[in-house]
Length: 75
View 1 (cartoon, rainbow, N blue to C red):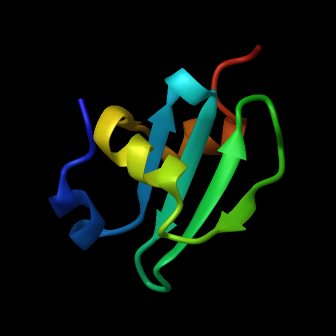
View 2 (view 1 turned 180 degrees about the vertical axis):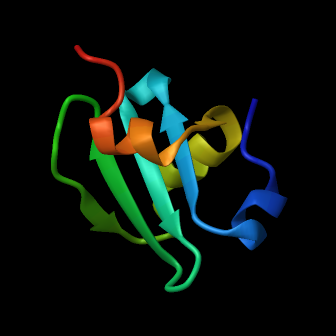
């Protein structure tokens, strides 16, 4: 698994990290990173240096904008 570095150069990136029940949205134009926990409708902006975001890049997988908006799997 893991998210290839090329994905971040191509455009916005949506990452699913089921081990921690969280998803991430990287916005290419601004470099901002947002986090949304499964089942939640709101997201938080986090630093791109977040250790959880780093783990998600290594152990998570790419997902779709639609799945991110839905908030991941239902708990």
